[in-house]
Amino acid sequence: MRPLPSVEDLGEGVWSVPVPIPGNPLGYTLVYVLDTPRGPVLVDAGWNHEDSWRALTAGLEAAGTSVSDVYGVVLTHFHPDHSGLTGRVREASGAWIAMHKADADLVRGFARIGADEQRDRQLRRAADSGASAAELERLAETAPRFQPPAPPDRDLSDGELVDVPRRKLRAVWTPGHTPGHICLDLEDGGRLFTGDHVLPGITPHIALYDHEGGDPLGRYLASLAQLSQIPDDTEVLPSHEHRFSGAAGRAADIAAHHEAKLGELAGLLDGEGASLWELSAQLPWKRDWDEMEVTSRRMAAAETAAHARTLERRGQAVCGADADGVLRWRAAGAAAARDAVGP
Ligand SMILES: [Zn+2]
Ligand SMILES: [Zn+2]
Image (tube, rainbow, N blue to C red; front, side, top):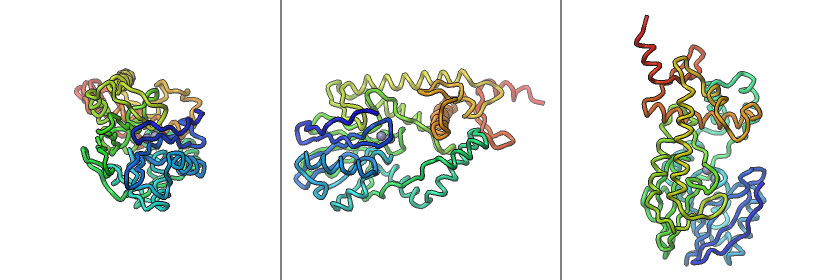
């Protein structure tokens, strides 16, 4: 577990408040606090846990303010390590909650569907991906119960200025890690809040959970390319790890990492086809596939799915369901050659 850094005054009315994510190897979310005449605006709020709440409220006190004075919370994206405490902050202060409309629509959808249907969908997707009956049973037992984030009050669009009195904070839509992920450009301070889009040492999780749902990796690579114009001396304030500069270089490194993974996956595809689980078992991960818990396998398979979808969009892969309904991925050229032979 990473040690929790201290609350820091970053100058020009910006503070960094690390909020722990208990039991998670990521360690903490960096919540940023912007002073305004109407009360502080938070960039993200942190995980929903009593220890996290204590760290957030104590951090605000250290910054010379209080949770009851919060004017607004702008979320980089809907994930629970960012959005978990927003409902509680709003209750304590009457603050507004803002996020990009693509994530806001997802959050409203989660609230409509409910936790049971969420779990059932997760199980159906794992079955489509080639999980065994025993793995599905284990997944049903161990998958954490989904808690939908608090619904937002304000939906943001790309390029919109966030309501931060006497400051210029602009939403920059960077879809990929989630459909509505945004970076926040503090134009009066030469700083860029990058959420989970670009982190200094970790490559963010890019996954396709809904097999119908688009090309998240393709969108992510396009969002990374957007950062190529960021001046090298712009201070980058990410949501995890630590602050850094050189956003363009880091974005290029992350893009190269995904291109290498795309090449590796393309190399595994043949004319026979393989399920996402079979393909994932052959790819390198931080932990060996054989030692992975089924919840981690599900996340790994969703990353493989995102890469397979990008290969499909590039004309290198095709996908079809077998007799059991399991999706099998094949090399596009091999499939064309096989179909051309015909009966
Ligand atoms: Zn995230
Ligand atoms: Zn995060």
